[in-house]
Amino acid sequence: MLGLFFFLPEERSFTYSLTKAICEGTTCRDYQITCSERGELVSMAPLTGFVTFPSDWKDTRVKNELCVP
Image (tube, rainbow, N blue to C red):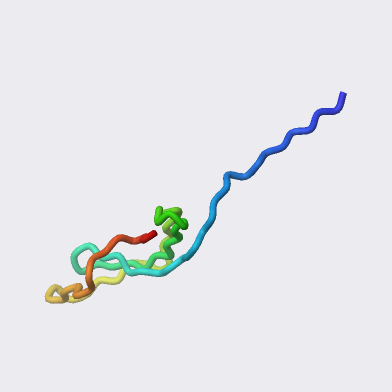
C-alpha cells in the first residue's frame, strides 16, 4: 500500500522588511524586521552587535510601532 502525505505550508504573505536600530538607554542594535500584510511582526533578527553612545546621547527619533498595516 502506498501512502502519500501532503504538508501544506502555512499561508503567509510578507509585504515588507525593514531595518531599525532599537535602543535601550544609550545602547543600540540594528535589526532586520519582517512584517506581514496585516501589520504583525513576523521576525526580528539582529544585524550588528551592540553600539553604546556617550552618556549624554539622546535618541531623538519618534517612537512608533515596528509594523504598521
